[in-house]
Every structure is written in C-alpha cells, then in structure tokens.
Image 1 (cartoon, rainbow over the protein chains, first blue to last red):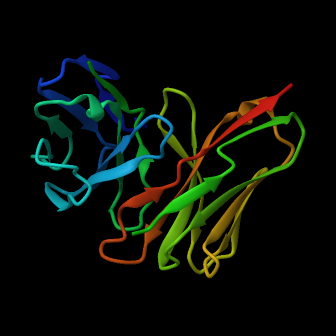
Image 2: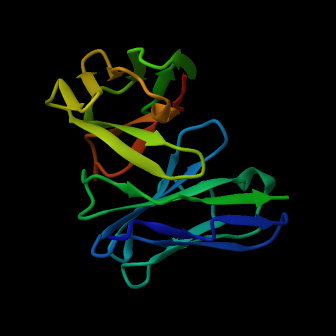
Length: 114
Length: 114
C-alpha cells in the first residue's frame, strides 16, 4: 500500500515569504506527526495530531509556525514570514493509533529560505 | 529534558566487518527505543524497536540491545555490506504524557566500502 507522501519534495522561497507544506498520511492512520531535521542533526519534534486536533504542539518553535489537519487525514504545515534559519527538511510521520505505535515516515520536504 | 547522543558521528568499514553503533540517553524513564535508517533524500525506515522491558531485539543481521538503567543502547550489524551504507538514528520515546513524540540522536553516518 501507499506510504506517507509529502509535497513538494523541494521548496525554495525568499526570506519573509509564506509557505505551506503538505503531508498525506497512510490511509486509516489516526495520528500524524511533524518533525524538522536541520543539516547534520536528528529530527526534532514539532507537533502531533490525534484525529483533527493537535494533541501536543510543544515543539513548534514560535508563532510563525502553524499546522492543521481539518478532516483528520491530510495535514498542512504553514510557516509565515520565513527566515533563513527555517531552512531544513520537514518530515511527516503517521501511526495507526498514536501513543507508542510505530511511526512511519515520509520522504520529507526540503525547505530552503534564501 | 531528554538528550540523545550517538557515537561515532561517522564510521567507515570494509565489507564483511561486524560493527557496533552506540546510543546514549539522559532520562532512563523511556517507554521504548527505536533504531532507524535514513538514506539520502529519503525518509526514515524503522529497523528495530525495543520496549523498555526488553533487553534486545534481532532482525536478520541486526541486533539491538537496551540497558535502560545506564541509558545506553547499541546496534550491532553483522557481516556488513555496501548496501548498509546510510545514516543510522536512534530515538527514544519517554514514558510520560502521551508517550507519542520521539527524541532523536544526531545519527551515525556509516559507509561500508568494497
């Protein structure tokens, strides 16, 4: 079956612009996660959705970052007024029920802010 | 705050050698520990997951051990092959709250040469 997909695979934008990154989880998975991976680092947790609601958004770095999952499936990570420090690979993962279930990762979106 | 460290940061071995990758974590109150593989431009692939009550897990040529009290895990790869070349990440899930988010190490970049 299809895995987690993310679009676009690459995004180049200018400082100050607004970007949206999309994640399509595995069908039927109720939990969805966003992580950010900077060059040479491991992924860092951003936000966790259980269904349509954000169960844990403690990893969002500031109020420029926002994520939604309106129908409990596809999620969009939104970044306002992008900064060069936002450049990273943004990874999405999903799991069947959340909690301690295995998370399945997508290929990521590489964001470059010039 | 949980911190996860992986040593070495990079490793190069000739084909056929056995090798050990190390992972240490500061907070022993973990729910489980997971080893991932990351290939360039791709997402993370789960290799092994060890529950906090377990001491080790095996899959093919891979064996992962867990010593929760000392905050350490090792990933043993037997008879390495060029196809094993990738970055290996360990991640822990804390036994608190929703036990949902993963805290990753910075990874070990492995190269297996012919």
